[in-house]
Image (tube, rainbow, N blue to C red; front, top):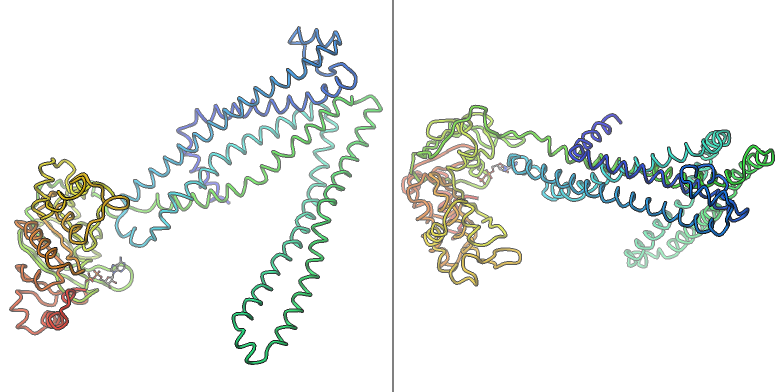
Amino acid sequence: MRVVWKTYLRLLGYVRPYALGMALAVFCMAVLSATTMVYAFLSGPLLASLLRGDAGALGEVAVWVPQLKDVINRGDKQALMLLLPLLLLGVAAVKGVAYAGQFVLIRGIGQRVMADLRNALFDKMLTLPVSFHETRQRGDLMARFTSDVQNVEQSVTDASADAIRHALQVVGLVIQAFLIDWQLAAACFISVPATFWPVSRFGRFLKRVGSEGQARIGQMTSQVQETLHGIRVVQAFGGEEAARTGYREQARRFVRLMDRSVLARGLYSPTMEILGVIGIGILLRYAGGRIVAGELSAERFISFITCMFLLYAPIKAIGKLSTYVINGVASAERLFEVLDAPITIADKPDARALTRARGEVTFRDIRFRYVGDEVLRGVDLTVRAGEVVALVGPSGSGKTTLLALLPRFHDPVRGQVLLDGVDVRDYRLRDLRRQIATVTQDTVLFHATVRENIRYGRPDATDADVEAAARAAHAWEFIAALPRGLDTLLGENGVNLSGGQRQRVAIARALIRDAPILILDEATSALDTESESHVQAALNNLMKGRTTLMIAHRLSTVRRADRIVVLEAGQVVEEGGHEALLARGGTYARLAAHGERNADVDALAG
Ligand code: ADP
């Protein structure tokens, strides 16, 4: 329970910026509550005016409006019959304005709170490390933006507002009931809860018996289903008779249960009503005595009864609120779980700035694990500035993981990744990542124009830069042939590009970034020969003058590397040139031979 309150209070913190609007809304609610009180009050005079032709208690309170007082004192029935409806209309108008006011304010604040929460959530998700995203289901994260935020809105704004509104109504009406006749009120407020509790218990009991019957029908249905499903077996084994008797027995028991349930449900309403009438009867008896004794006017009694009736709705509503609050708090906890998730990869307080690295990369005794076993087990590797290194090795040997350490998608458990001789953890994260362009296996293009997709590599690139990058990526020809050229929309409702074309757009994006280091995860899917040669030419342009770390899947790509590094089970097992490694007859030779035998594009890396 304490946790619930803590979460709830924290949620209320999101409403604080809108405190003024909230205060205004509460004011509207107070007005709303006051108008309800006026309605209750007027019910007595209304009846009096119809029955006796005077306005009864209205006269007592009308002292502050002389004209009103005149009309009432004169006992002018005609005028009274006009006055009372007008008064009601006036109250209704005030009530309407107050209702609309609080409604608009509360919903408006609710929308803003939701927007704030969504923004905070999105900001957080953008900065949370890759490891967070890898361990979460995307659908689950998406649900936090939609249903959870909505639940929270219902509980923070709607439910809080309703609680205040209903509470104000209850307080107002209770005060009024005491003002009308404190003895009667005291008697009611002591006896009503005392009777209400057993009544509601009885009601719940009757309902439970009713729903039990509904549940049983499910069992019968599944028996039919099972028998029909296995009808061949039933018939082949002569099980019809047993099935028949079993089913009849179930049906018989069901009818009996239903009889009880129907009886219970049938009795529910009348029982409730009779109990209610008993309560009213007692009230009438008590009040009647006082009316006869001249201690209470009939008119006041009517106002009193109206109060009691008007109390029913807000009290019932308050009882229902807890479900909203509980839902909202559960959702809020899911939101806060994300908002509080630690950002494990962030700048050190005194992080170094870096404009442009030379591009020397060193992995020093790297050990890494996700959960469970070590995936990298002491990797040492130095890549000189401008060198092209191909990583090969069986699937799961740790190639992708190793390269993910350079842009700090993960930090190693032990060991260091150095860029130009400095631990990557000492640089500002933004600066570090600016040194790296990545072309991944599954080309990620956004639902945007070709131009925007290319410019993503460097947002301040000019149109001329974009075109030059597209040309160097061997993409200009097909882009120019698109319906709107560079301004063609890609994805979902836009144009779909072929695999090779998508790769070349991604290469253009990497080219325009003009980073000193390139991380390349070669696509495994085979392209047609022409596409392939364009992609290869584009990659050649991209790799020129950059330190390149690539996961190579094809012999043709590997041959372009200055050095081949073979990984196996999280360790570097061989390194050198293609010919030398073949001659060694080790892992590389095995992988290469396998590739040639099977014409397998995926031979060198999984
Ligand atoms: P490669 O790129 O050589 O195929 P990876 O670096 O992808 O190898 O994977 C190395 C090992 O780490 C594999 O056993 C893989 O199952 C495991 N692994 C990779 N990514 C994750 C992850 N996000 N969470 C847990 N284990 C992972």
